[in-house]
Every structure is written in C-alpha cells, then in structure tokens.
Amino acid sequence: MFYHVCFVVPDIERAMSDLTRSTGARWSVILEDSLGEWDYRLAFTKGGPPYIELVQGPPGSPWDSSLGARFHHLGCWTDDVTKSSARLSGAGFPQEFSACPLGRPYTYHKVDSIGGHVELMDISRQERFLRSWDPGAEPTTATIEGTALS
Image 1 (cartoon, rainbow, N blue to C red):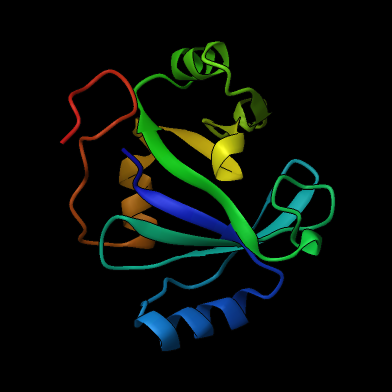
Image 2: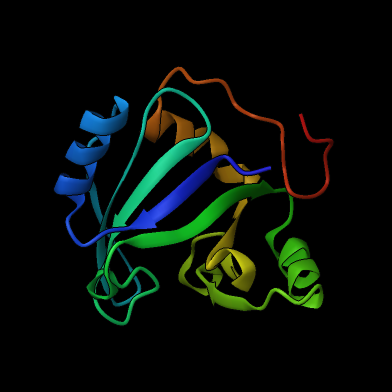
C-alpha cells in the first residue's frame, strides 16, 4: 500500500497554489535540501495519507524538473529496503536510483506500466516524516513487505 504520490514540478509554488485552488489541499512549508550533488525543493500535503508530494529538482537529478511536470512515484513504507528492493528488481521492476549510499534509506524502482516509480522508504523514517510534515497524524502500519497491510 502506498502512503503518498509524488509529482515532479518545475514551479513548486504554482503547483501548490493550483492544487489548493482546485482540490483544497493544505501544504507543509517548502523544504530546501540537498542530496549528493543535487539541491531540491519539496513539500507535502497535510491531513493524513495518502499525501501528495511535490518535488522541484535540477537537471540530471532523479527529480529533473526541466523535463516538465509529471507523475514520479508512489511512496511505500518497507521494513527492509534492501530486501524489498531485491524483490522488486527480481520481479522485473529495476532499481533506477538508490539514496542509501547517500545516507537516506530509500530507492526508486521503475514501473513502466504506470509511467513512474515505486519508492521504497524504510519504516524507521515514518516518525520523522510525520513530525516534519504532518504533526499529530497517526502512523500507518501498512508496508510493502513484512507486516500485514491495514
């Protein structure tokens, strides 16, 4: 089960405004951060899962916004990124990016039939995620592997 859907956007403020006006979405503040050589900006909706994530990234990054606005991934919690990543790769969904060597416990796996990726995020990051993006929200127990989906 997924907990968020991500879109890469060339103008994060515009995308946030448009989604607020069209759907009533409420947003976190925009985070400016870096991973490896890439600086990026991101925001999440508030109000519980499933969340919407918007990412604005530089050319050549996994979130290259110069390619236009588009669906990027479905984010899933997992009990074991390495094990789940190997399972997805073995099932024909190749790993296209791993942030693990850069100190972040997640990977992206290409799913051609949906035109995007599945992101595997280690469940150990869930408490930090909720504290940062949606304080007061309840944790979810659903993971892609290891525990029963709820």
